[in-house]
Length: 344
Image 1 (spheres, helix red, strand yellow):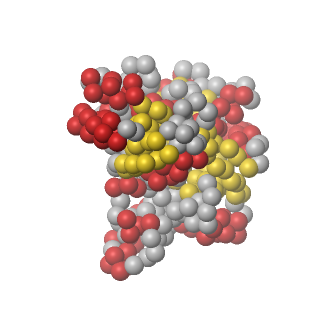
Image 2 (spheres, rainbow, N blue to C red; image 1 turned 45 degrees about the vertical axis):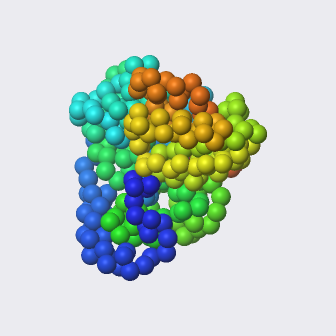
Image 3 (cartoon, rainbow, N blue to C red; image 1 turned 90 degrees about the vertical axis):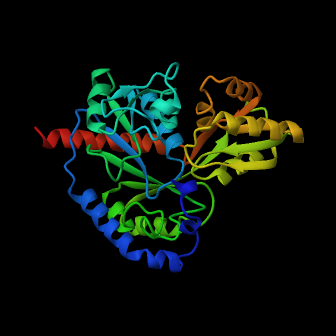
């Protein structure tokens, strides 16, 4: 997880990455074998995978949501596949109920996804896919799972953060890479550069040389957060909290205090009471992400007090050109059609 990961992962390669290189090489060997030799179950519907090259947040969840919304606009019935990071579910697929499930039971990202389409959570994504198809879904969007899922995807889109890129370029545990870059690009169909900056330039060059499509997008705050002109205590437990703090500033908020937490952090009553007290003492408004907000909905009095005082900055993905989601969904459908014809 990015915010719990060693900070040296996101800087230049140094002696620490070098010291861990033998372990990184072993991890990379296993990861490459898994990517290239895993037996993946084929579904009877198109599957679009939205994944990351690295651990941590590159912005794949809002991209996955954008793809599902596009599929629905094209007359399809999308569904999400998720492992449910941080949830306490069994391997049996679970259909997320955003009105009754909690982040502790399903994970935070599935709760966000379920606002937009039927979402099934399970480490066994093939079983979850069968559940979604049985519920009437005819287009599946897999949020993460590119490196490990045992399900065939018809199109794989890898999201890379334009600012942090692939960090020091080393594989876990010496760096944030989930597998060697070449091995990942070999199985990908396209790369999406998310945000502004030159941290992803190496990936873009290699993807282009490998004949992979390269798209671009940025996230922007949606209207209605109410932060404009307000002095704020901003807190976030996501892969890259600094990205959120910058988003709040771009929405017109004045981030006076910033409080980063570990990725997928479950806020205790002590955490929340401390945030409330600090904001009150400094005369600040509280603001956080939609993903953090769902982790605060656990019913305690202090959680309810935070939610009553909280501003939530929702974000949306803006693609360049704007028809990128349509291009990707169409490519997924075409790949599925070709797969279906070969299997006859």
